[in-house]
Image (cartoon, rainbow, N blue to C red; front, side, top):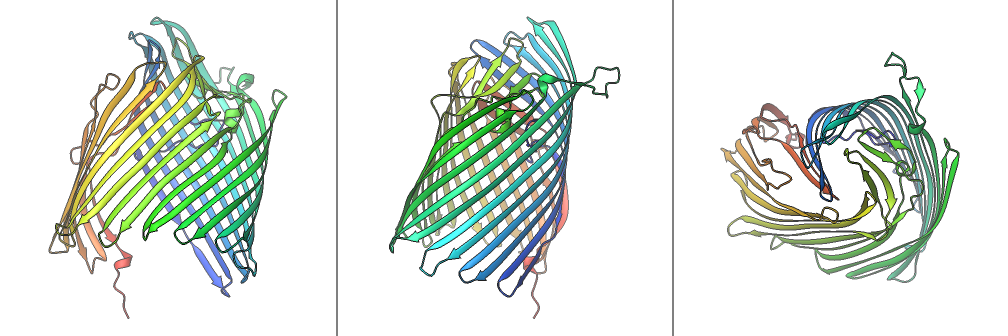
Length: 616
C-alpha cells in the first residue's frame, strides 16, 4: 500500500502480475560550427498493471507466534511525460559549458484491496481485516544542471563549477476504507471501521553548487581542492478527514491525530581535498572532506521546532594496481552520512494499514557508513580465460533502525530510532571461466555469499539479527556457429537466519537447474528450447511445496540475410510458472506467491535493421 507521507509510487514488480506497457518518443540532435550540440528527447509512457498475491508472514516473539495469511489485489495505472534537453557549448579550446534540463510530469492511480487474518500459535484468531485504498497522485519533477570547465595553459591544471537545481512537487488524494475485528482468546472483542480521505501536498527543493580545482604537484602527483554548498527544503502537509454524516462520500471532520504540516530545512557546507598518484602500473589517492550540517525541523501544526548541528568527516582512499595487461586489482574506501528522511522525522501516525501503523521520530540523528570494496579482475584473451573476485563490506554506526511494538491482537506500531552499536553487511562474488578449445567447451563457476547483522527493538527488548546465504554455481556450454548451442547451469544455495528473541535458527536449501539448447536446420531454420527446475526446501515454517518446472520452446525461420525472422513459440508448456519470494527480516519471515502469465502461444515476425543489406 502506498504511504501517504512519502513520494514513493506503488511498487510494480514486473516479474509478476500482468501489465500493458506503451512507450513512444522522439529524439532531435543538432550540431553546428563544431562547437554547439543540442539534444532534445521527449518521451511518453503509459502502464497498466494488476496483480493478485497471497502472503504468509510469521512474527516471532519469544514463545509466541503471530501467523498472518493475506490476499492482496492491486490495480495500478501510470502515465508520464518526460522531457530531456542537453546543450553542449565548446566556448574555446580551454573552456566548455554543458546545460542539462529535465521536466517530468506523472500521474498515478492505484486501487488496492487486501483481506487478512492473524492467527496465534494455538490456532486462535487474533484479528481479521478488510482493507481497501484508492489513490490519485499528480507529480511534477524539474531539474537543471550547469557545468562549466576551464583548462589552464599548464597541463592538468583545471577548474570547474557545477550547479544543480532539483524540484519535486506531488499532490495526492487518497481514500481508505477498512473494517478490522480484534479477538481475545478467539472471542470477538472489538470492531473498528475506518472511512477516511487523505490530502497530501509534498514538496522537495534542493539547490547545490560545487567548485573543484586541480593542480599538478609533479609528474606523478596531483592535488584536488573542492567546496560544496547544499540547501534542501522539504515540506509535507497531510490532512486526514472522516465522514460523520449519513453520506459516506462526504468527509467533513478533520482528524487531528492524523493531520500534520511538517517543514525541514537542511544546509550543508563541505570542504575537501584529494591527493592522487599515477605512475606506470600503480594508481592511488587519499582524501578527506569536512562537512557542517544544520537541521531546522518545524512541526507547524503543533508549533514545535527542532534544531540540530553536526560536524562530519568524510575520508576516502583508493588503490589500483595493474600487475599485468588485462589484470587489475582495486581497493576503495569511503565514509558517508545517512540522513533520516522526512517521513522518518515527521511525528505523524500513518494508518494506511491499520494493523501495521508507522509513526515518525523528530529526534532521529544521522548515521555514518563506512564502505570498503576489494576486487580483482583478470582476462587472458589468448587462453580465453577469465577470473573475477569482489568483496564488499559496510559498517553503519548509530544506524537508523526500527522499534516495533506488537500487542496480543497482533497489531504492530513501528517507529524509527537510532541504535547504539554497528550494523554490518558483507557480500562477495567470485567467478572463473575458461574455454577448452579442443572440445569447444565453455566452463564457468561462481560463488556468491551474503552476511548481515543488525539490531532493532521488539517490545522494548533488543533483538540481534543475523542473516547469511551462499550460492555455488557450475556451468558448461558448447557452441558451433549456425549448427547448435547447448548449455547447462546449476546453482545450489543455502540460507540461514537467526533472531535473538526467537532463539531458533531458520535455514533451508534452494537449487536451480537450467538447461537450454538450439539446433539449426539448413541454417535458415532454428529450433530451440529451455528448461528450468526450481527447488526450495520445505521447512516447519514453509511446509507447502514450492518446486516448479518451466519449459519453453521456439521454432523460427530467417529470410533475406537474417533481416527478417518468422517465429512461433510456446511458453510454460507445463503450466507451472509461479512467482514465489521468501524473505527473512529480523524476527519476521514472509513468503509471497504472485500471479504470473502461464502457458501461452506466440506467433510473430521480427525485422532486424542491422542486418539490412546495404545498396551501393
